[in-house]
Amino acid sequence: MLDIVGQAYRNCDGITRRDALRVGALALGGLTLSHFFRSKAQAQPRGFKDTAVIQIFMGGGPSHLDMYDLKPDAPAEIRGEFKEISTRVPGIRISEHLPLQAAAMDKIAIVRSITHHNSSHLPSSHFVLTGHEPAGEITSNINPSSGSIVAKLRGPNVPGMPAYVAVPRRTSYGAAAYLGGAYEAFPTQKDPNAENFHVPNLRRLPDLSIDRLSSRQALAHDLDIMRRDVDAHGEMLALDRYSAQALDLITSEKVERAFDIEREPARVRDWYGRTPIGQNCLLARRLVEAGVTYVTCLSGGGWDTHVNNFSELKDVTLPRYDRAVAALVTDLYERGLGDRVMVMAFGEFGRTPRINADAGRDHWPGAMSVLFSGGGLKVGQMVGSTDSQGAYPTSKPYSPGCVLATMYHVMGIDYTHHFNDQSDRPIPVLPEGRPIMELI
Image (cartoon, rainbow, N blue to C red; front, side):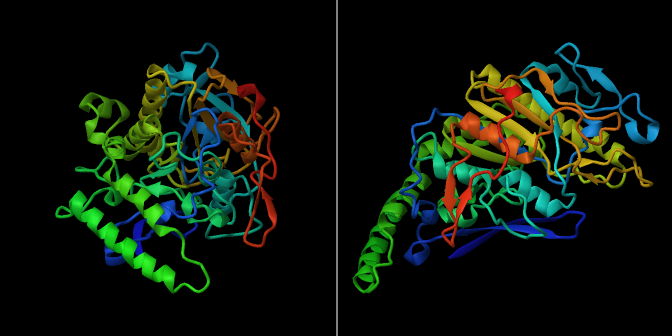
């Protein structure tokens, strides 16, 4: 096996997260990706409409109070430095540092009454990305990520494309858990904003022609037959079939085109922003157009603002996030994909109402805001409200499970469905939560 290790990063808990993609290879190291096609007999599309999801994860915890839920009448130690501005939708006001989203507000819905009870990064991330709240601190997926569940129950919208892609690497708890490796995210591994961006697992060695790939595949096939002949327990999978699918992926012009962000005009790339989140979102749009069902995008960090919350948001994080999201949702609607592709953006919690001594805001799960767009949802609205300090919902509270139930509803997936884990225990897709009906 070949281990391909992505970037590590560290949050304020001091825990390094490192994602590794274990790539199965044929004998002689000739062909990668075949593990994605092993045990895939259950991953065929079920005939649902060809909806897709782009999920933007703001790991670290974005400040709802400085983005979508400002409190201009609160004391200075609560309201902070930012002011509200009007948006395209009368009566809806958001942060002055989100002007492009304000202009695209008719394509966006914000739910401000999401709440839970865990203020630690890792279990909260697991909760919002899987719908299952772990009992304590964890370092890996206990339950499958929403992307893995979509890959299992829907498969790709277009045959030959991956069902679940992570740009540039999977989210902190974006793994398949007991569903198995066939439903892991396919990561690009590289930053689409980098020069000469390419996806390593889709690039052949310079001296490896299609004929040589085919020859290696034939040799590996013969070796597999020999191995099966001595397999007393019948445990060998039909590797030749899955390897053939891997070969199709590697040699597919359709797949190559979808991942080739340099095909986009310079003006479009500039529109999204020449930043990691901007190019992540642009590549995600290309992928869902080509037939990928679920794409996760990392936002580039900068949300864990215990220190200098306002300067960090104003000068770095909000401008690049604002540009990327506004371009993405506008682009999707202009391309006629507003009913088919759902966008959602969130972190694992919000930030404290009271500003700390370091001009920062700390972890706060009592209230957080989630952005939705597309997917045929009712947009151009604010859903839910919080108290005068932005601490807790004053309207109907919604949980992370409700956020994911809304997504599963759009995807045509039964969120009450059960899987069996390694111990053969039935585990529901979601243990709690219902779709947010104001959006439906």
